[in-house]
Image (cartoon, rainbow, N blue to C red; front, side, top):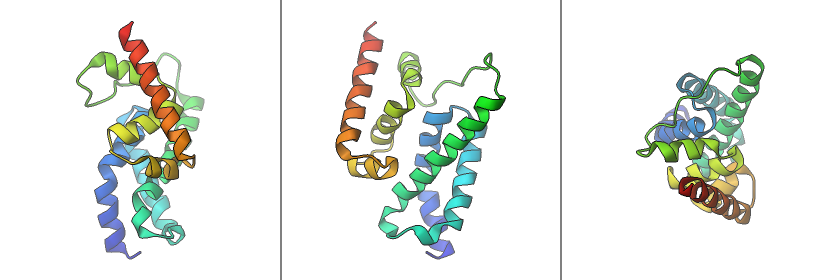
Length: 151
């Protein structure tokens, strides 16, 4: 993959990358750090991308790993008194809070499908799980949100 193609694909994926990292980190500066780290890692490892058609799922996987690295570092340095910013771009504050409360395992596939329009196959590839697991996690996430919002 040449530089121009890489930059073009990265720019096309930037909105998705920000929203996926936001669903995990819920902090603008950390999201920017994760996106920068993702771009660097992806450029250095671009030779490992077997098929350019899968660039978006490949880069999301790198972003998830970079975001998890940031979360690990944050756990060592952030005090318990600090609170996360609310999830952006959700019209209903109750939905935003309910979504924040979901475990990452359920929240991430739901955000990838609903916000990003990714297919079950793409989500499965990015998360390295089966499509059946993706369907199950999305279903459990929706059920958990439904129950919490009914209360």
